Image (cartoon, rainbow, N blue to C red; front, side, top):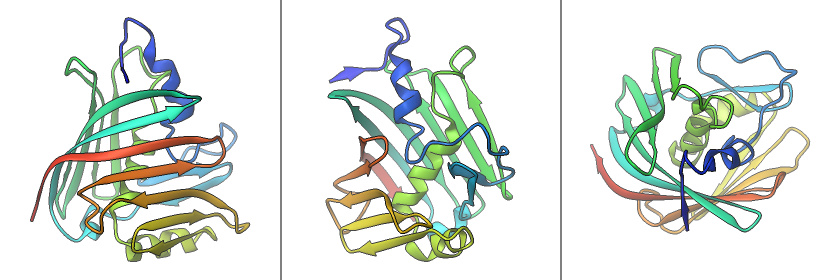
Length: 202
């Protein structure tokens, strides 16, 4: 397993991978407020932090695999009914990206010099919320763009407005904060695993 290293320019893999679920397109107008690009000419409005249904503090490890190469990103997540904070760190502990989501507004930070190689924090947030927020929180935002999220106890499928399966999320445990979450994106073909190392839920 390889760990992120600025000195080895290891961040270049992140742009195709951790644009994380669905890559955006330069021709679509930049989303505003709490909207995120999920396909060419398609943006979705994110659920609110309160729609998670509980307060959460979690340490997670994201591992992305593409073309038989794997890399890792430690992430800290904190959610209250009023706000959400997300931060990603390098292997030596420096904060390299972060995001704050409150009052339907998202503020992001990327370490200077890494803006062209790191994933957009909004895309990291979109994937995180797609795996953890309840199905009911996603129904209306996705219906507004003709997409849907289908769910069984151990799996979710994100389906676009043409009926194509864009991504699949597999859960190892019914409690999604235990076990490994495997996130498969079909075009391009890459896999992300999310492992919660420690959490407190209230």
